Image (tube, rainbow, N blue to C red; front, side):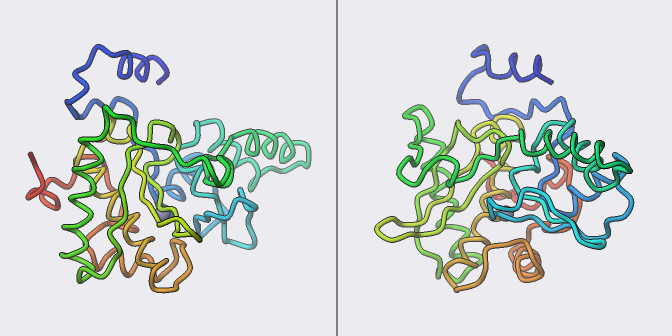
Length: 247
Ligand SMILES: [Zn+2]
């Protein structure tokens, strides 16, 4: 995996080419995919999984419900394994080791970056950001009745574990959407547009006074705008959905 990343970002590839060069399976991208993945690693007692953006809750569970910070979607394999051990571990020692591994994974959140340090798109990535911003306007008209605010969409080279992020508007600053540059390179344009729509659903939650989460309301709206909130998807497995956006 490390080697694959190195060759991918080693500068031997045409920077303008967003080819699908994925070698490892794509990381889970939503709660259901994460749950399925954790099950494949041995998770048994959990029936429901919910993603959070609350930095105070990294991983927690009660009964059959598991809550995981969304920054763990793309966490390394041993962190996912640790989440399973944290839930299923038989001894306290086992669970403690798992816990240590879980919290050692640094989640990339606005809070962890500090409030004043919003990343800027690199000049090289501006054409991508402009294209994503144009798609934002188009999706806004197509799926949200043009009611969402026109927010900047930037390309993030800092984002490692997440595919994209919506930052809620705060006093003095407008909201914004960030799409991971690695995600674009690794999964291609169609997947990045899928992520853009996902983040736009969060923007819609924010601007209509709803909680920003992945609950039932999110899933209903996601289905409404034509993205698979719950379904398992493989990269590139859905060539029709964004077919009009090719090129
Ligand atoms: Zn989300």
